[in-house]
Length: 232
Image (cartoon, helix red, strand yellow):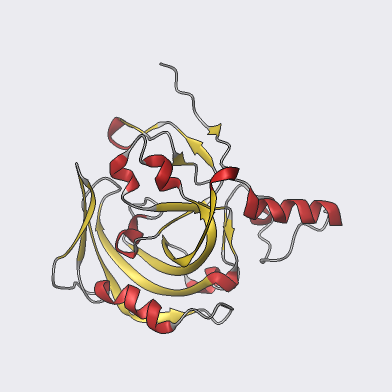
């Protein structure tokens, strides 16, 4: 069978209000992410390296309104290509060039995005709304769907709330991964949402100065508190 490659799925009717904390790991530090947020890499705002709220100078008012609106309204693109260990990617595997992928499960955040990096930051984000891609993954990869992935076009700086340093061991998904979060939480002074710091601390706490193990089993992605920490 020929590889269909990238394809667009009409995901507009699957946009959902979420209104809760979500999480993402990224090798870029708070000095870069806090003042500008997250943007998909294919959008002109990202390509022009503009700070949130700015657009390329050649855009007129109509184009400005249309393109910024797309960041919130358009669904992500999906891909169906072979990837790690010669495995077929699920039908609803999100193309990272067109969206920002996060998880609703803080315990599996170090695999968002998939990476073999040994050091990163786990960001806490207030997710107003997005595309519940894990609902789609339930139809063709039930194991992957247990990561509770959601996708958005962008996350403005005001919704990036906090970050914690993360050290991890292991390979890329679906290899076993162990990680530990640093005890210190860094808060974003650009954030404008009034999510309680207590809620943020409660989400991070089980994995701070503790070793958490992520395994991919036949029944889903599981996490285990190994019970001790390595140096972070």
